[in-house]
Picture 1 (cartoon, rainbow, N blue to C red):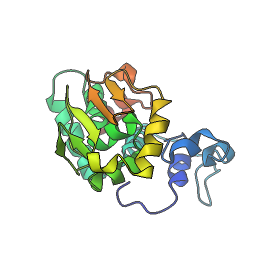
Picture 2 (picture 1 turned 90 degrees about the vertical axis):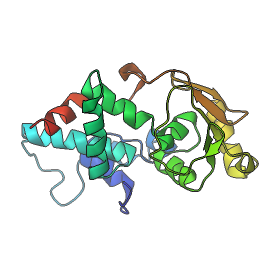
Picture 3 (picture 1 turned 180 degrees about the horizontal axis):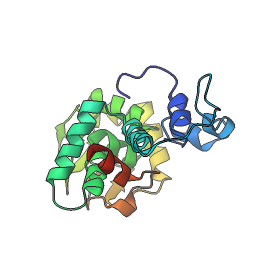
Picture 4 (picture 1 turned 45 degrees about the vertical axis):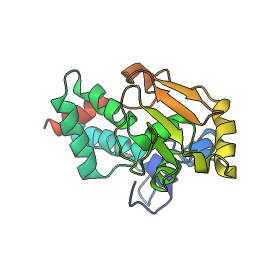
Length: 208
């Protein structure tokens, strides 16, 4: 979350699933939800009957937290997704995936979306040769996203590039880890988004 300052692992426990907010740590035994798979707080282990509205609300909150987006901005994404042709839920996920901070993360230049967002804000990336420091910048088909030349020699990006070389890139991205750049070769479709999301619940939430 843009203004969330508490422990990120509490968010995963609150939603009852891994949101992968802390990068590689989420894949280890240190992951909090692996050790305490219940909501945080005094009543976290109590059994509660969740209403249909509650299920839809939690799904919306979960996606907001995965991508680190505030409520008003998320609502704006939904309105735009509704305006576009096609399935609203899939349109919403496509818009979120094409955010510059998420693309940088998907390229491997950030151990988490939060780290990738910070690197974008600090001006380390270019889009089609032009520096962009807006995490929510909407990338598009054939856009070339690259690490700024002056940043490539830093130890941080050398380490990230080495890690990115060993990871499998999404099919909609063509990545050259050595050159520290990637191109959007196709728009992401639902099958490309490997996240525990039930987007129809979000559509139903906003359609109430």
